[in-house]
Length: 71
Image (tube, rainbow, N blue to C red; front, side, top):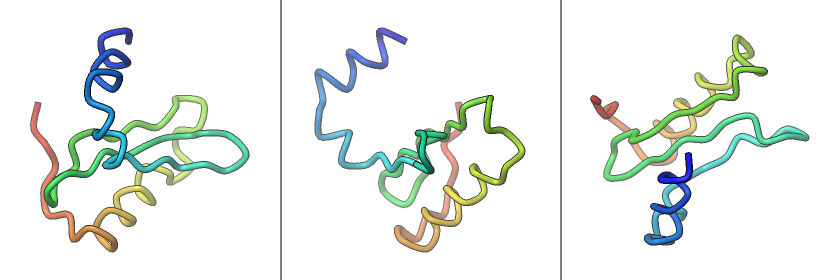
């Protein structure tokens, strides 16, 4: 996790591409760049609540996302 935090510290402009799902608590986030989902995360405490789907729908609607990044 520290390497991820360090990446954001080294490249703070990346934070402009990250959107957070917040409903009293931060429950997940999505990282969108160039019509591609780079990262999608939902905290395991909130799995099966449709949060991932809502984040993907948000990305499609607002950024015309067409791809999921392969790892």
